[in-house]
Image (cartoon, rainbow, N blue to C red; front, side):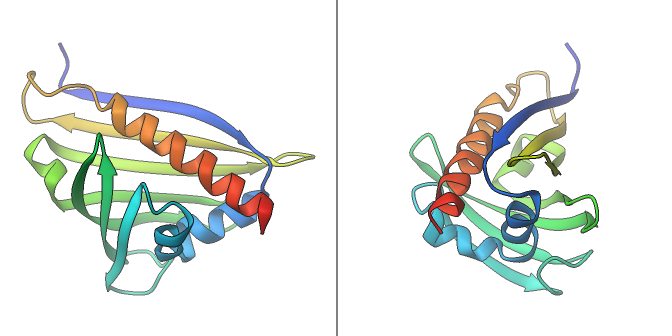
Length: 151
């Protein structure tokens, strides 16, 4: 069993790639009002929203339990509508030495496709593959899209 892994999926949404990127990269604190059952808080700790090196603290709900993570924007590309968050500390650090979440939004004729990738290094072989986190990411993307469609 490998300690290194990647989970990925595509989610087709009706929102434009720019609309999705704007929230997930430049205004993730809006998620607390858009998807309050999933995201409880997003606070900027250092840097500027959407900027390389920005550090933010997120509290989210997974399986009915509140968890907190501190993330660093390790890559951002407004042209390709891509943002990558890397784990710095908090709850997931007890299971993973490395954990990154990358979201790439690609514009289509109508709507866009979000490619969600989670790459990780488990601390031990006993740590489960983070499928529940991928599923939560898909739920977040889907609910954000529904919100953007209404806005």
